[in-house]
Amino acid sequence: MVLINLFLTFVKIGLVGFGGGYAIITLIQQELMAFGWITADEFANIAAISQMTPGPIAVNAATYVGYRVGGFWGSFLATFGVSLPSFILVMLAAHFILKFKTSHVVESCMKGIRPVTVAFIATAAIFFALESFVVLSPFAINPGALVIFVAAILVTVFLKMNAFLVILLSMVLGLVLC
Amino acid sequence: MKDSTDKTASVESQIGPKSKTHVLADLFITFFKIGAFTIGGGLAMLPIIEREIVDKKQYINKEEIVDAFAVSQSLPGVVAINSAIYVGYRIAGFAGALATALGVILPSFISIIIIAMLFTSISGNVYVEKALTGVKAGVAGIIACAVVSLGKKIIKNLFAGVLAVVAFILALWLDVSIVYLVIGGALAGYIFYTVRRVKRHGAD
Image (cartoon, rainbow over all chains, first blue to last red; front, side):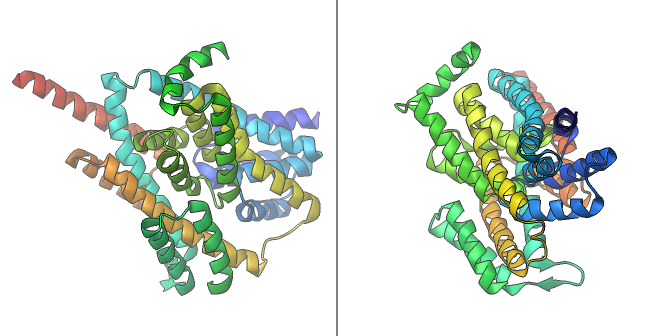
Protein backbone atom coordinates (compact mmCIF):
# COMPACT_ATOMS: atom_id res chain seq x y z
CA MET A 1 0.00 0.00 0.00
CA VAL A 2 1.31 3.39 -1.06
CA LEU A 3 0.66 5.27 2.21
CA ILE A 4 2.42 2.68 4.37
CA ASN A 5 5.41 2.63 2.00
CA LEU A 6 5.49 6.42 2.00
CA PHE A 7 5.48 6.50 5.82
CA LEU A 8 8.25 3.88 6.09
CA THR A 9 10.36 5.66 3.45
CA PHE A 10 10.20 8.91 5.41
CA VAL A 11 11.01 7.15 8.71
CA LYS A 12 14.11 5.82 6.94
CA ILE A 13 14.98 9.33 5.65
CA GLY A 14 14.60 10.73 9.19
CA LEU A 15 16.88 8.00 10.49
CA VAL A 16 19.74 8.29 7.99
CA GLY A 17 19.45 11.94 6.89
CA PHE A 18 22.35 13.99 8.25
CA GLY A 19 23.41 17.56 7.72
CA GLY A 20 20.43 19.83 7.22
CA GLY A 21 17.87 20.67 4.56
CA TYR A 22 19.80 20.34 1.31
CA ALA A 23 21.32 16.94 2.17
CA ILE A 24 17.90 15.61 3.19
CA ILE A 25 16.28 16.92 -0.01
CA THR A 26 18.81 14.91 -2.06
CA LEU A 27 17.97 11.82 -0.03
CA ILE A 28 14.21 12.34 -0.57
CA GLN A 29 14.86 12.62 -4.31
CA GLN A 30 16.84 9.34 -4.47
CA GLU A 31 14.30 7.40 -2.43
CA LEU A 32 11.17 8.68 -4.21
CA MET A 33 12.54 8.40 -7.73
CA ALA A 34 13.49 4.79 -6.96
CA PHE A 35 9.79 4.15 -6.25
CA GLY A 36 8.82 6.04 -9.43
CA TRP A 37 6.58 8.29 -7.32
CA ILE A 38 8.04 11.49 -8.67
CA THR A 39 9.96 12.62 -11.78
CA ALA A 40 13.18 14.68 -11.85
CA ASP A 41 11.32 17.74 -13.23
CA GLU A 42 8.68 17.60 -10.52
CA PHE A 43 11.44 17.28 -7.96
CA ALA A 44 13.29 20.41 -9.13
CA ASN A 45 10.04 22.30 -8.64
CA ILE A 46 9.53 20.81 -5.16
CA ALA A 47 13.08 21.80 -4.12
CA ALA A 48 12.51 25.40 -5.26
CA ILE A 49 9.15 25.69 -3.50
CA SER A 50 10.59 24.22 -0.29
CA GLN A 51 13.26 26.91 -0.14
CA MET A 52 10.91 29.79 -0.82
CA THR A 53 8.15 28.81 1.58
CA PRO A 54 8.34 29.58 5.31
CA GLY A 55 9.46 26.64 7.43
CA PRO A 56 12.39 24.22 7.50
CA ILE A 57 13.32 23.05 3.96
CA ALA A 58 13.19 19.32 4.76
CA VAL A 59 9.74 19.59 6.40
CA ASN A 60 8.44 21.56 3.43
CA ALA A 61 9.77 18.96 0.97
CA ALA A 62 8.33 16.03 2.95
CA THR A 63 4.91 17.70 3.16
CA TYR A 64 4.87 18.60 -0.53
CA VAL A 65 6.06 15.21 -1.78
CA GLY A 66 3.61 13.47 0.54
CA TYR A 67 0.76 15.57 -0.86
CA ARG A 68 1.71 14.76 -4.46
CA VAL A 69 1.90 11.04 -3.71
CA GLY A 70 -1.07 10.60 -1.35
CA GLY A 71 -3.03 13.83 -0.77
CA PHE A 72 -3.56 15.18 2.76
CA TRP A 73 -2.86 11.86 4.52
CA GLY A 74 0.24 11.42 2.36
CA SER A 75 1.65 14.73 3.57
CA PHE A 76 0.68 13.94 7.17
CA LEU A 77 2.39 10.53 7.11
CA ALA A 78 5.51 11.84 5.35
CA THR A 79 5.98 14.66 7.87
CA PHE A 80 5.15 12.45 10.86
CA GLY A 81 7.51 9.76 9.53
CA VAL A 82 10.46 12.09 9.04
CA SER A 83 10.07 13.49 12.61
CA LEU A 84 9.59 10.18 14.43
CA PRO A 85 13.27 9.11 14.65
CA SER A 86 14.15 12.64 15.87
CA PHE A 87 11.79 12.28 18.83
CA ILE A 88 13.41 9.08 20.02
CA LEU A 89 17.06 9.99 19.35
CA VAL A 90 16.99 13.62 20.53
CA MET A 91 15.06 12.86 23.73
CA LEU A 92 17.50 10.03 24.55
CA ALA A 93 20.47 12.35 23.96
CA ALA A 94 18.90 15.22 25.94
CA HIS A 95 18.01 12.86 28.79
CA PHE A 96 21.58 11.49 28.90
CA ILE A 97 23.23 14.93 28.79
CA LEU A 98 20.94 16.40 31.48
CA LYS A 99 21.38 13.40 33.75
CA PHE A 100 25.18 13.28 33.57
CA LYS A 101 25.96 16.95 33.04
CA THR A 102 27.83 17.22 36.33
CA SER A 103 30.08 14.20 35.64
CA HIS A 104 33.65 15.04 34.60
CA VAL A 105 33.44 13.12 31.29
CA VAL A 106 30.23 14.77 30.02
CA GLU A 107 31.17 18.21 31.37
CA SER A 108 34.64 18.22 29.78
CA CYS A 109 33.31 16.86 26.45
CA MET A 110 30.59 19.55 26.37
CA LYS A 111 33.22 22.22 27.11
CA GLY A 112 35.07 21.04 23.98
CA ILE A 113 31.93 20.76 21.85
CA ARG A 114 30.58 24.28 22.61
CA PRO A 115 33.40 26.35 21.00
CA VAL A 116 33.29 24.06 17.94
CA THR A 117 29.54 24.60 17.63
CA VAL A 118 29.87 28.40 17.89
CA ALA A 119 32.44 28.23 15.05
CA PHE A 120 30.03 26.14 13.00
CA ILE A 121 27.27 28.72 13.53
CA ALA A 122 29.71 31.38 12.27
CA THR A 123 30.07 29.43 9.01
CA ALA A 124 26.27 29.58 8.69
CA ALA A 125 26.43 33.39 8.64
CA ILE A 126 28.96 33.15 5.80
CA PHE A 127 26.73 30.66 3.97
CA PHE A 128 23.80 33.11 4.09
CA ALA A 129 26.07 36.00 3.06
CA LEU A 130 27.19 34.01 -0.01
CA GLU A 131 23.53 33.34 -0.84
CA SER A 132 22.60 37.02 -0.68
CA PHE A 133 25.14 39.83 -1.02
CA VAL A 134 28.52 38.31 -1.95
CA VAL A 135 29.32 36.50 -5.18
CA LEU A 136 32.79 34.90 -5.18
CA SER A 137 33.73 34.20 -8.80
CA PRO A 138 33.78 36.69 -10.37
CA PHE A 139 33.77 38.75 -7.17
CA ALA A 140 30.72 40.99 -6.91
CA ILE A 141 28.57 42.59 -4.21
CA ASN A 142 24.82 43.07 -4.27
CA PRO A 143 24.68 46.58 -2.69
CA GLY A 144 20.99 46.38 -1.72
CA ALA A 145 21.48 43.10 0.14
CA LEU A 146 24.64 44.46 1.82
CA VAL A 147 22.62 47.42 3.15
CA ILE A 148 20.03 44.97 4.55
CA PHE A 149 22.81 42.91 6.20
CA VAL A 150 24.34 45.95 7.93
CA ALA A 151 20.91 47.32 8.90
CA ALA A 152 19.94 43.94 10.43
CA ILE A 153 23.07 44.01 12.62
CA LEU A 154 22.50 47.62 13.69
CA VAL A 155 18.84 47.19 14.69
CA THR A 156 19.64 43.91 16.50
CA VAL A 157 22.55 45.37 18.50
CA PHE A 158 21.30 48.90 19.22
CA LEU A 159 17.50 48.64 19.17
CA LYS A 160 17.32 44.99 20.38
CA MET A 161 14.68 44.59 17.68
CA ASN A 162 12.60 41.41 17.69
CA ALA A 163 14.15 38.85 15.27
CA PHE A 164 10.78 38.20 13.59
CA LEU A 165 10.42 41.90 12.83
CA VAL A 166 13.99 42.03 11.44
CA ILE A 167 13.16 39.17 9.02
CA LEU A 168 9.88 40.79 7.98
CA LEU A 169 11.61 44.14 7.32
CA SER A 170 14.43 42.36 5.40
CA MET A 171 11.80 40.78 3.17
CA VAL A 172 10.13 44.13 2.43
CA LEU A 173 13.48 45.87 1.87
CA GLY A 174 14.52 42.97 -0.40
CA LEU A 175 11.57 43.73 -2.70
CA VAL A 176 12.64 47.38 -2.92
CA LEU A 177 16.45 47.17 -2.93
CA CYS A 178 17.54 43.79 -4.36
CA MET B 1 4.29 10.25 31.00
CA LYS B 2 4.83 9.24 34.64
CA ASP B 3 8.57 9.23 34.34
CA SER B 4 8.66 12.54 32.48
CA THR B 5 6.93 14.31 35.39
CA ASP B 6 9.88 13.44 37.67
CA LYS B 7 12.34 14.97 35.26
CA THR B 8 10.39 18.16 34.83
CA ALA B 9 9.92 18.69 38.56
CA SER B 10 13.32 20.37 38.90
CA VAL B 11 12.76 22.30 35.70
CA GLU B 12 9.46 23.78 36.86
CA SER B 13 11.06 25.33 39.91
CA GLN B 14 13.21 27.47 37.58
CA ILE B 15 10.21 28.50 35.54
CA GLY B 16 8.60 29.94 38.66
CA PRO B 17 4.93 30.74 39.13
CA LYS B 18 3.86 29.98 35.54
CA SER B 19 1.66 26.88 35.30
CA LYS B 20 2.71 23.96 33.14
CA THR B 21 -0.17 24.56 30.71
CA HIS B 22 0.94 28.16 30.36
CA VAL B 23 4.53 27.08 29.62
CA LEU B 24 3.38 24.50 27.04
CA ALA B 25 1.13 27.03 25.29
CA ASP B 26 3.97 29.55 25.31
CA LEU B 27 6.42 26.98 23.85
CA PHE B 28 3.94 26.02 21.14
CA ILE B 29 3.26 29.64 20.12
CA THR B 30 6.95 30.61 20.18
CA PHE B 31 7.98 27.65 18.01
CA PHE B 32 5.02 28.21 15.68
CA LYS B 33 6.38 31.72 15.08
CA ILE B 34 9.90 30.31 14.68
CA GLY B 35 8.63 27.78 12.11
CA ALA B 36 6.76 30.48 10.21
CA PHE B 37 9.81 32.77 10.04
CA THR B 38 12.46 30.13 9.30
CA ILE B 39 13.31 30.62 5.67
CA GLY B 40 16.22 28.77 4.13
CA GLY B 41 16.94 26.02 6.64
CA GLY B 42 17.43 25.16 10.28
CA LEU B 43 20.51 27.34 10.72
CA ALA B 44 18.36 30.45 10.31
CA MET B 45 16.34 29.30 13.31
CA LEU B 46 19.09 29.34 15.92
CA PRO B 47 19.46 33.10 16.45
CA ILE B 48 15.67 33.40 16.74
CA ILE B 49 15.55 30.64 19.36
CA GLU B 50 18.38 32.39 21.20
CA ARG B 51 16.56 35.74 21.27
CA GLU B 52 13.13 34.33 22.17
CA ILE B 53 13.88 31.43 24.54
CA VAL B 54 17.16 32.57 26.14
CA ASP B 55 17.20 36.40 26.13
CA LYS B 56 13.51 37.25 26.39
CA LYS B 57 11.87 34.36 28.25
CA GLN B 58 15.01 33.01 30.00
CA TYR B 59 13.82 29.41 30.01
CA ILE B 60 17.38 28.16 29.45
CA ASN B 61 20.86 29.72 29.30
CA LYS B 62 23.32 30.34 26.43
CA GLU B 63 25.41 27.22 27.10
CA GLU B 64 22.32 25.06 26.85
CA ILE B 65 21.18 26.56 23.56
CA VAL B 66 24.62 25.76 22.10
CA ASP B 67 24.33 22.20 23.49
CA ALA B 68 20.90 21.91 21.84
CA PHE B 69 22.36 22.98 18.53
CA ALA B 70 25.36 20.61 18.81
CA VAL B 71 23.03 17.66 19.48
CA SER B 72 20.61 18.65 16.71
CA GLN B 73 23.39 18.84 14.13
CA SER B 74 25.12 15.64 15.22
CA LEU B 75 22.06 13.38 15.14
CA PRO B 76 20.22 12.28 12.01
CA GLY B 77 16.98 14.06 11.14
CA VAL B 78 15.80 17.55 10.32
CA VAL B 79 17.90 20.11 12.27
CA ALA B 80 14.91 22.38 12.96
CA ILE B 81 12.82 19.53 14.40
CA ASN B 82 15.77 18.19 16.41
CA SER B 83 16.45 21.60 18.01
CA ALA B 84 12.75 22.10 18.77
CA ILE B 85 12.55 18.68 20.45
CA TYR B 86 15.73 19.24 22.50
CA VAL B 87 14.65 22.67 23.75
CA GLY B 88 11.06 21.53 24.45
CA TYR B 89 12.22 18.42 26.31
CA ARG B 90 14.73 20.40 28.37
CA ILE B 91 12.11 22.95 29.44
CA ALA B 92 9.02 20.77 29.97
CA GLY B 93 9.76 17.06 29.35
CA PHE B 94 7.96 14.93 26.76
CA ALA B 95 4.92 17.24 26.60
CA GLY B 96 7.27 20.16 25.95
CA ALA B 97 8.97 18.28 23.10
CA LEU B 98 5.55 17.56 21.55
CA ALA B 99 4.51 21.22 21.85
CA THR B 100 7.69 22.61 20.25
CA ALA B 101 7.84 19.96 17.48
CA LEU B 102 4.18 20.50 16.52
CA GLY B 103 4.69 24.26 16.66
CA VAL B 104 7.71 24.24 14.35
CA ILE B 105 6.13 21.80 11.84
CA LEU B 106 2.61 23.28 11.54
CA PRO B 107 3.41 26.52 9.63
CA SER B 108 5.25 24.46 6.97
CA PHE B 109 2.48 21.93 6.82
CA ILE B 110 -0.29 24.50 6.40
CA SER B 111 1.51 26.72 3.87
CA ILE B 112 2.77 23.81 1.74
CA ILE B 113 -0.65 22.14 1.56
CA ILE B 114 -2.19 25.44 0.43
CA ILE B 115 0.55 25.88 -2.19
CA ALA B 116 0.28 22.27 -3.36
CA MET B 117 -3.47 22.70 -3.83
CA LEU B 118 -3.28 26.07 -5.60
CA PHE B 119 -0.07 26.27 -7.63
CA THR B 120 2.17 23.96 -9.54
CA SER B 121 5.09 26.38 -9.80
CA ILE B 122 6.28 29.50 -7.96
CA SER B 123 9.98 29.17 -8.80
CA GLY B 124 11.39 31.81 -11.08
CA ASN B 125 9.02 34.52 -9.81
CA VAL B 126 11.19 37.64 -9.66
CA TYR B 127 9.44 39.15 -6.59
CA VAL B 128 9.84 35.91 -4.65
CA GLU B 129 13.56 35.90 -5.55
CA LYS B 130 14.01 39.51 -4.40
CA ALA B 131 12.22 38.97 -1.09
CA LEU B 132 14.25 35.80 -0.51
CA THR B 133 17.56 37.60 -1.15
CA GLY B 134 16.53 40.27 1.36
CA VAL B 135 15.60 37.68 3.99
CA LYS B 136 18.90 35.82 3.55
CA ALA B 137 20.91 39.05 3.97
CA GLY B 138 18.93 39.89 7.13
CA VAL B 139 19.38 36.36 8.50
CA ALA B 140 23.16 36.59 7.86
CA GLY B 141 23.14 39.72 10.04
CA ILE B 142 21.10 38.11 12.85
CA ILE B 143 23.34 35.02 12.85
CA ALA B 144 26.48 37.21 13.01
CA CYS B 145 25.03 38.91 16.13
CA ALA B 146 24.20 35.51 17.66
CA VAL B 147 27.77 34.30 17.06
CA VAL B 148 29.19 37.32 18.92
CA SER B 149 26.79 37.01 21.86
CA LEU B 150 27.28 33.22 22.20
CA GLY B 151 31.04 33.52 21.63
CA LYS B 152 31.43 35.99 24.51
CA LYS B 153 29.80 33.47 26.83
CA ILE B 154 31.44 30.27 25.52
CA ILE B 155 34.97 31.27 24.46
CA LYS B 156 36.44 32.26 27.81
CA ASN B 157 39.94 30.73 27.67
CA LEU B 158 42.72 30.19 25.13
CA PHE B 159 41.82 26.51 24.69
CA ALA B 160 38.24 27.34 23.66
CA GLY B 161 39.51 30.09 21.32
CA VAL B 162 41.97 27.79 19.54
CA LEU B 163 39.31 25.06 19.21
CA ALA B 164 36.85 27.53 17.69
CA VAL B 165 39.38 28.87 15.15
CA VAL B 166 40.48 25.37 14.10
CA ALA B 167 36.86 24.21 13.75
CA PHE B 168 35.97 27.32 11.74
CA ILE B 169 38.82 26.68 9.28
CA LEU B 170 38.03 22.96 8.97
CA ALA B 171 34.31 23.61 8.37
CA LEU B 172 34.72 26.50 5.96
CA TRP B 173 37.68 25.49 3.78
CA LEU B 174 37.84 21.73 4.11
CA ASP B 175 34.09 21.19 4.35
CA VAL B 176 34.49 18.85 7.35
CA SER B 177 31.10 17.57 8.57
CA ILE B 178 29.75 18.90 11.88
CA VAL B 179 29.54 15.30 13.13
CA TYR B 180 33.35 14.90 12.98
CA LEU B 181 33.87 18.41 14.41
CA VAL B 182 31.65 17.59 17.40
CA ILE B 183 33.44 14.27 18.01
CA GLY B 184 36.84 16.02 17.70
CA GLY B 185 35.72 18.82 20.05
CA ALA B 186 34.48 16.30 22.64
CA LEU B 187 37.80 14.38 22.55
CA ALA B 188 39.87 17.58 22.75
CA GLY B 189 37.74 18.85 25.66
CA TYR B 190 37.99 15.56 27.54
CA ILE B 191 41.79 15.33 27.13
CA PHE B 192 42.44 19.03 27.93
CA TYR B 193 40.27 19.22 31.06
CA THR B 194 41.38 15.79 32.34
CA VAL B 195 45.07 16.71 32.00
CA ARG B 196 44.39 20.04 33.71
CA ARG B 197 42.57 18.36 36.57
CA VAL B 198 45.36 15.78 37.05
CA LYS B 199 47.99 18.57 37.04
CA ARG B 200 46.07 20.59 39.62
CA HIS B 201 45.63 17.60 41.90
CA GLY B 202 49.34 16.81 41.44
CA ALA B 203 50.30 20.33 42.54
CA ASP B 204 48.24 20.13 45.77
